[in-house]
Length: 193
Image (cartoon, rainbow, N blue to C red; front, side):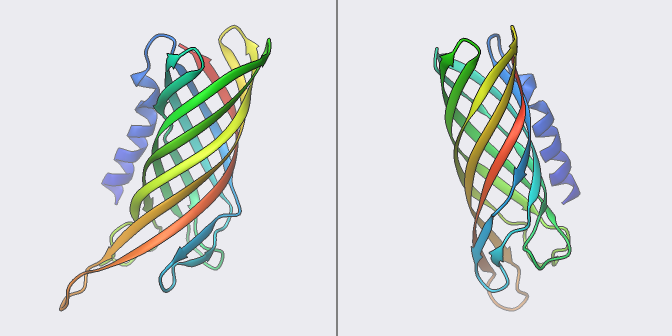
């Protein structure tokens, strides 16, 4: 788990390094609240509020459309009755449409399909870390503070479809499917490089 987590943190830190000229690069602090888990056995219920850091690098393919990556590292991911929280790494591609509504104010909407890994704090050795497909949608506003700097506020929703494998010693391995959803609110900055 430590190797996977180290790789995940390095991937997030490297996201801005893939930028090109005119690339939008930014970051947000996010609050993820009101989430739910729908799974088998003990994997069912409401999620505690979690906190995330999201970085993004998006390249313009049209004056109003960008495509890029927006990895998010979330902390404190757990069911309401659990003591120990986990870490979740979302690695989505992000397609964003932006429209200027005033000289300093733009609105945007995005779709973000990708892959996610969850690293639970206290997890049995015979159960793999849950991972799977995610799909996010959302929108926000960007207020220009300077020539290349904007303050952004964002609302979004991500649904995840994770699978964990239970390694059973005598019979075939068993898979456990878990669906989760997290609304989020984020605030951050964005710049053009």
